[in-house]
Image 1 (cartoon, helix red, strand yellow):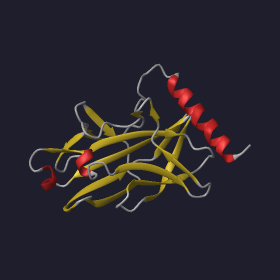
Image 2 (cartoon, one colour):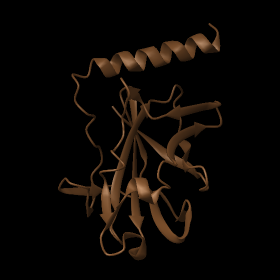
Image 3 (spheres, one colour):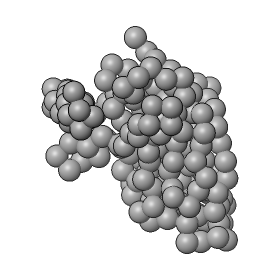
Image 4 (cartoon, one colour):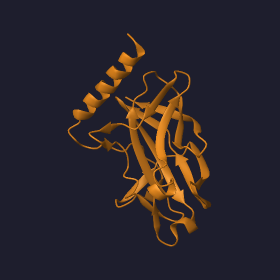
Length: 182
């Protein structure tokens, strides 16, 4: 089978699976000890950071955002990404700032890269809707974290880790662990 046919079959299979989910959103996974305010909802649990970094806000080098990444979780045909964004105190300017503003107003384009198998994964979408947190509505006060979640197709090969790129001007996160839930 040619590689383009395999990719087409994989994409059609994942989109077919998405259409059979009954229209509900995927359920967040993980549990942990540190609670954080998550947008307009209640408290959300932070499961545990495996990689982190602090980066300048794209287009605004006077402000920074702390980025904490949890392990990737594969369940059935999908893989969940959980990232916590924490704006510096001045960026929020006494109020709150959304993920869209913290990541350069449109520069957030998550991709998971499997360099060993030369495969790249992007956020799933269905009828124009991305399987990810609404980055405009998800806000945090300065110094407070906000959760971003996105879902990807599960890896085609069993892998122990993947590299994550979030914003083109930021260094990628290497070797983000992948866990499998049966």
